[in-house]
Image (cartoon, rainbow, N blue to C red; front, side):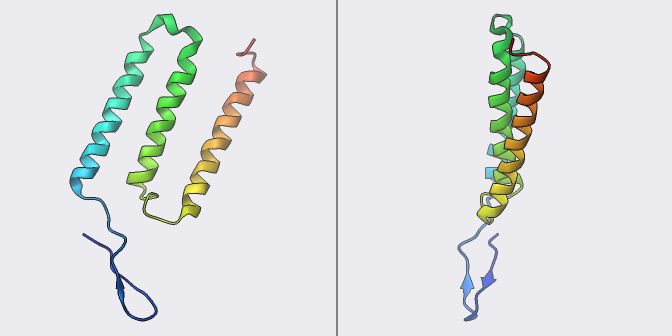
Length: 106
């Protein structure tokens, strides 16, 4: 299904089309695999506190996939992407600040 947008000269612009159902299925399977990796990494005792950046990376990857495909930011204005990235960066800074405040890096 494609979205038809008429510009000022009444021509139809079909450059923006939504992904097909198979694409959503593939994205869902990628999210399942990333979630399985998160669960698997949790059982690696040898990682110690190194588990934190690994899980953070996997979580950020899942966040990016959900935002790009299910929230359609890949197909929308870049402004929306910047707004979500600002939220992600703010959350990461707050978490790191709290970890430093409570002595996790000592």
